[in-house]
Image 1 (cartoon, one colour):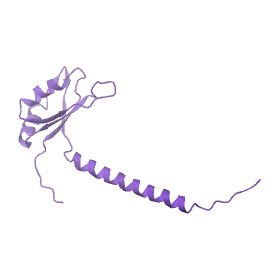
Image 2: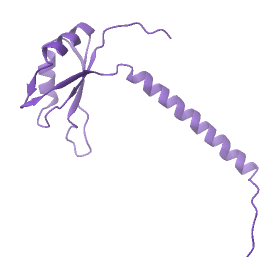
Image 3: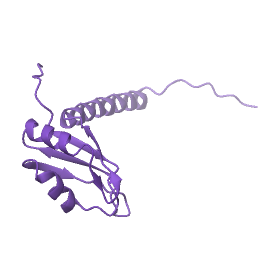
Image 4: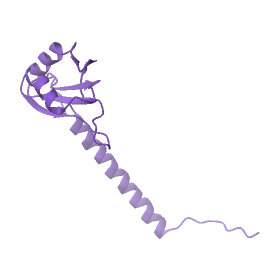
Length: 125
């Protein structure tokens, strides 16, 4: 597999105020280019976790937003912007493959033990 060096399109936004909404992030980042996806991961109680992922269609739009918003405050909190890992799907596929392989090994080991149980010494006291 050859990886071509292309500009990153996904930005991780940390220190997002808890009162900020997805719509506000869409408005803020949308003014710098066309957005592909905006995710605001949530906790079990329904509130978001204080960070977001913003993905642009092109790397140039993402770069423009990154430079323009690097010193931005939202609800009095400084937004911390970093480039996010873009190969999320590839990593997830590798993790799934590894889990399948492990499950297959476990099944094979379990059936082998069922056919030939290990010899155990029984001690009587």
